[in-house]
Length: 92
Image 1 (cartoon, helix red, strand yellow):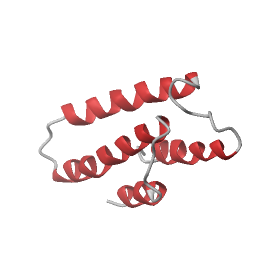
Image 2 (cartoon, rainbow, N blue to C red):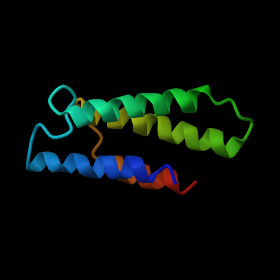
Image 3 (spheres, rainbow, N blue to C red):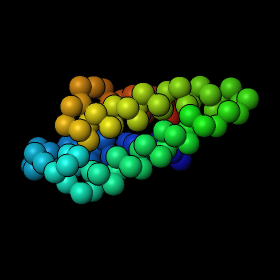
């Protein structure tokens, strides 16, 4: 479901070992597109006001992950456990 896209993106950022400007906002047009997608996703998640506690719990786990992904795209990522966080968020 939803966790696959962030997991894939976080894994793709590892391509920077080969190309340091890969998926960096302002240096790679794809990163700019991905940033816009993440921002739209954040807006959508924040705008939903469902009473479903499972959704609220998952949203509270995914919003920080999306923030970490935006930091990665900005070249300022500092969460070495991002892939593990995404995996953990998908289990609930």
